[in-house]
Length: 202
Ligand SMILES: [Zn+2]
Image (cartoon, rainbow, N blue to C red):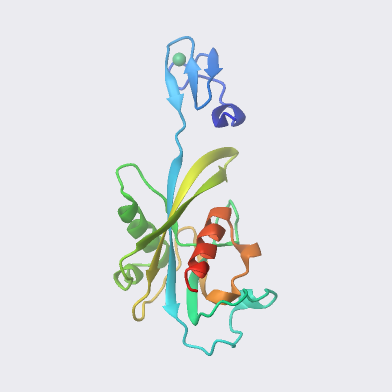
């Protein structure tokens, strides 16, 4: 599958020629010889946890109403989920994070995205993010599909922090770790990361 062909690229971005040849990972312009790769984009996300302040059997989360509690998870921790303010997956839950910009490393991108989405205070109160896993993702945006490699970290919130939803985040929720409604998580890659996080609690 050539994403460039599937996304409907018709002209050479360099010379405008229509004489394109789609190879496995790129397009080749027969007029000027230009080769264009739409490389895999890199996304970064973080599972932020904190120790729950409620008894384990309490039902406080709006997203837990209809969900089956996960099996045999012994956790009194809560995870921070954000509500997406934009398409794709508007209104679904996601992990804080976003795309790595040119010139950034993963840590810089994570710091920028978390700050943009939740305010300046939270990052200073986080433990040092530790690598969790990476997962393949496809991101559909404005009639174009991007291949994405999402890289996930985990971190704990140490102390209190005021969270201010902004940018592409509508709101947030602290969800008890054993009450996550996976039907409402936006992307398969985030589900994979959350499942691994839960497994590691055993
Ligand atoms: Zn060309």
